[in-house]
Image (tube, rainbow, N blue to C red; front, side):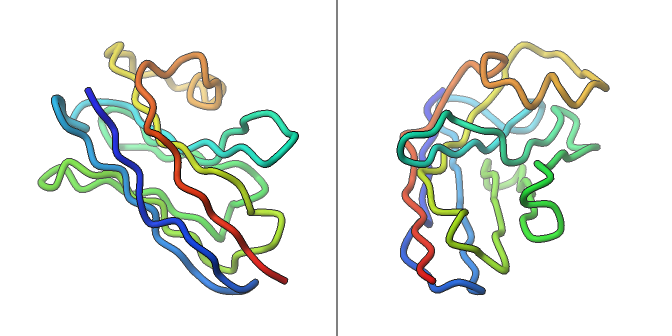
Length: 129
């Protein structure tokens, strides 16, 4: 499975961006997927995730109410809609896929980067103040 992330860019605070993550060589249809981000000098952190059946999404507290993850099975693409962006959202954003076939009800499972098997190359998001 190869993941291709796109949609990053430079935006002013309060603006919006939509990130896309397209899968090839596999499908998102029954796969858990997530978005993580890494700012300079910081560790990679969880942003949002969706379960393999698409029934539940999880978000980090820092983005709750502003970021929305969605999945289009027909296009084999996962999206991260980011609204009300803040300078602290500046980071490289990575999409990831978990192909282990596990449907966990524990949000911590999806928040853990080690539980993802495939990663996209990252897309830079820069929010100016």
